[in-house]
Length: 140
Ligand SMILES: [Zn+2]
Image (tube, rainbow, N blue to C red; front, side):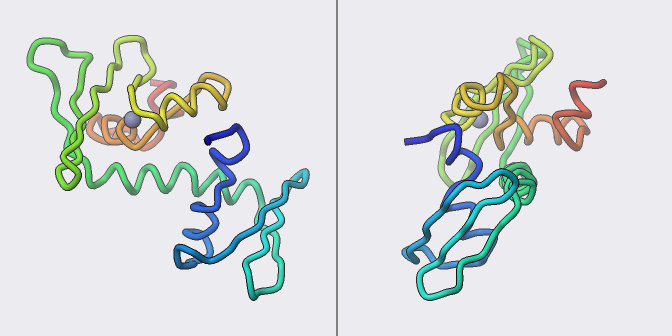
């Protein structure tokens, strides 16, 4: 189950940040500025919350590069974002000024991150439009 905490401070993020294999036991504890991480068989370590937040964005931006963006012929504010290898597709609507997606990640972010969200599909559209970040797009 996704929570406000594990949306950003997830075991998957720790695996990617530390280059760990799937299946390695990881324990996490939250402190004010850092996350205490104990990987089975290693000494416990700390990872800053800012490192998790940077990874949260960079991971989605990197995943966006593999997606195919197509603008709707009939509605200029609608984009189709396809993952050719998985055979999935999501529609991104930029009509309200902020990109809106229907995927689980986007909805989790809206729920837990104060109404601001940008999933890999939205980053794919922003990249297609020539923007490097959500902040840059919102400030246009
Ligand atoms: Zn999405």
